[in-house]
Length: 323
Image (cartoon, rainbow, N blue to C red; front, side, top):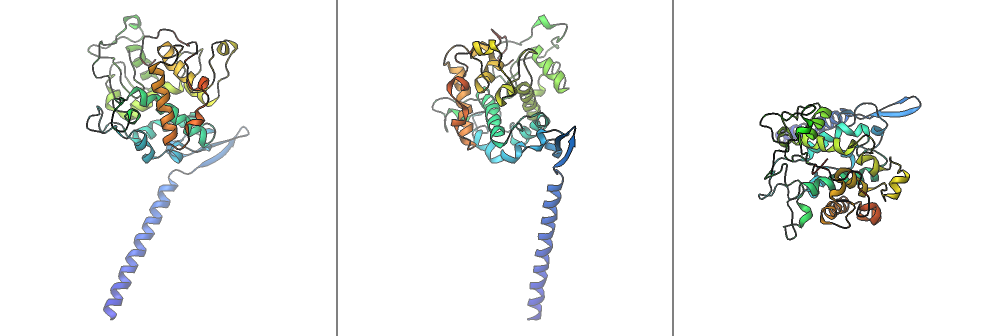
């Protein structure tokens, strides 16, 4: 009897030790990214560790991983690792959240409250999903479940080398500047400009984008957060409401919202042409993701805000598939 009691006490002690270690480990893990707060020039700023680092007002808000987690990423891109997909094993949640961490201190997914954050992530990923899909009408799971099927253009028709930029972004010998990434990059000058911003030599090594999912997401978020031209707003600013349209914008029917993000990124390729398939695909992905995240498509706004069907394009006849 004493022997059995001793064994039971020993097992109980082991269980207590294991639980204590688990609690300490959890506490340590949580304490690695504390929310630090201070006041600078009368304004509250925060630092949230690796995910939102650098004393920013935006870091005082919820970060993306607070409201967008692995299972939700899997729901949005449920078919990306199917055997028939073309980038199996490439895209994942960790790559996205690591890339997003660079831009969260600047407001990506952290502008406003949780609702606006979820809407912006749905909007950004709506563009990504539509530009990397291999879905079609009768595809298993529906055509909207196949985002992130590609990470590069499969059959490039050309090398996308424009000699007009030979002094600023000269084409590297043997380099091919076909579409790669989450918001596909085309042409030597776009690889060059993106590489300068990210401090990566993409002009000489455009293949880096198809080799590193974090870099591919980072390049796409940079494009979302950065004006295509200095005289224009960024897609981020028009979506979250930072942009105030001018009289000319109003006359051109350009309003803050999702529709104008398409206008900025693709110009007259999809905008100002009515309800064309290219535009409708992007819109459909955005609405689908809003529903999957539990936000609901009713939050997308009316037709004139959601689409760019009647908008005058910011940029006419761009030479790239994604500026």
